[in-house]
Length: 503
Image (cartoon, rainbow, N blue to C red; front, side):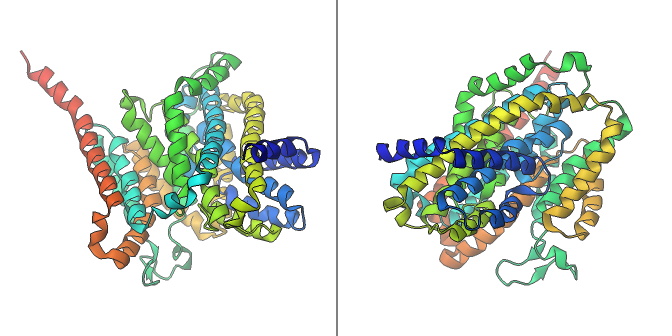
């Protein structure tokens, strides 16, 4: 095992051909990741013709590296302009964009880029550790557990608002849950709440909803306010010292980094949950476990670190069921699985017995690819951060065009532009009224997964699925989290009331 592991690493780094392909894959993956709406799935699909007929190992390393580093650069537009590329990056926007407005874009970028790289490496390590104990872990989860994990993620809505805003957060969250039911019924296959609009049969576009809720309202606000995104002068707002301070935040919060990376990797192993679930669950966990939850949403560095480690950590986890069971751990892995089959890679038990060297090569590709991506981004983000000090009214038209293209490219449906306008108006109303917008995305992302899993669980076990051992554990976690959220959110209000009435 040890010989195979380090032999794969030596063969990887000693091959100029493979390292050259990895370098190209990193550059292309970073460019795709920073563009809203494209995402890893489309980039892999676009690259398949170029790897057709390529050596199996070289082609697999190229595709996996490109897919893995997509998330490493996706947070750049989230932090700089409040434009999430997809559901994974929306969680980073909550604290990354406020940091940019405070003139700390370099600190946020340093922390997020480093956290992404570390998360990707830890995800690969978790994958390697899990090789001997694969099957029992994968088979432990059924639709019953998928449903309860989705509910667990939805329950974190209570942590994203405080005091009287918790009611607003729940209302916005249920609004997202309501919209998640638009589309085809998962059981009967009949359209619901979509009328004669065929583009809604697949549901409301997540990319469109996220851009409308976060990006466009912030751009409208910036254009009406005037000035730059950063509220501090340029000469005091950026320095390499600030960038390095962001990098140092990752080892400073090492326990949070380790927890969220492992959580992200484990969620990645569970087919169907995906990176958005990992990012939002770990963001909620960071809020829930913080001694100062009131800082989140206003520029807490932990709110940048947690979702980034999780969304990159899940790549190592999602590769596990893809390779060993032929079950894609995410939508991106589904496209990657098709590409692997074209290259001649047959997922299954033979990957453990006869092709373990290929498995270790892919694990090392995740590690080396993330290290290259982090090194590149830390060098160039000095110039990227300068954009936050340019007059916002000059940037807004270009950014809105960028958003519109991203919205269209995500599904190639022009009707999404109409949805973008409608949801942008709602999102701007939430921004002006100081209503939280994050719960909407959580409801929209997890609502569909919860409904489909609930229907499957009811068909398999009826209501007795609630009595399964793992289900009881998850139910206890959900009840405990909700009780703790209510206690912690309303305790400060009670304390203030006691202070006011005391003599």
